[in-house]
Figure 1: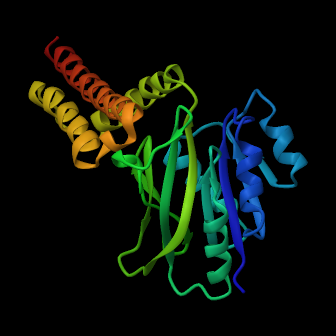
Figure 2: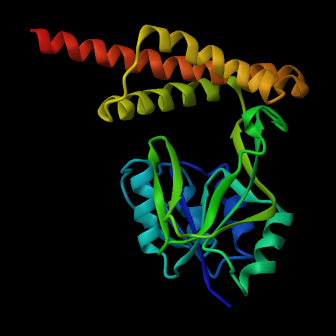
Length: 257
């Protein structure tokens, strides 16, 4: 039976980390936590639960997760964020294939909880994620803060039943803080990557994002919260491209001096 390393990165996650670790314990042969210098009880909780605990100042989402991969003892890795947890059905699905991993990687659906409500529509579900994989065939990539596992072209990928549960936020205030942080990171990454952004893009990208979430992905079926989620997604999109556009304009002004 192949051994599996559970890998988690943390920063001030005392509210979520115990639930995350306990959900992974039945399927992982070790759990590695890489903490970004938390100031709350996260380190204490992790150590009490017997994980392999490391401290590393934050390198960026992609970079931090790849650093954590390198600390795992086994090549088959189950990577979760601290505010996620395996559902019982997903844990059972992983255990059912663990003794014979026929694929290099596995995807499963992620179910997001937004302000106390599980979201079964908009882009928040099924929100399919690849989180169980052979690190010899893949690693974390993408553009911060929107990291993703990128597998080699010859890697075989399967699908597992059950949901990866994700506690996004408990309040709109908390989500607005996340929007401000993520949009700033995304704009900077896009700017450094040479992504262009016209005034038109600042307008139409958020409009399309709202239409996609609320109409195309049936966000209206989630009632009032579906409207809120769709609006917040559009706002995040607007913030990202508005900030990217401003970075481009500022850079042009500096170049003209």
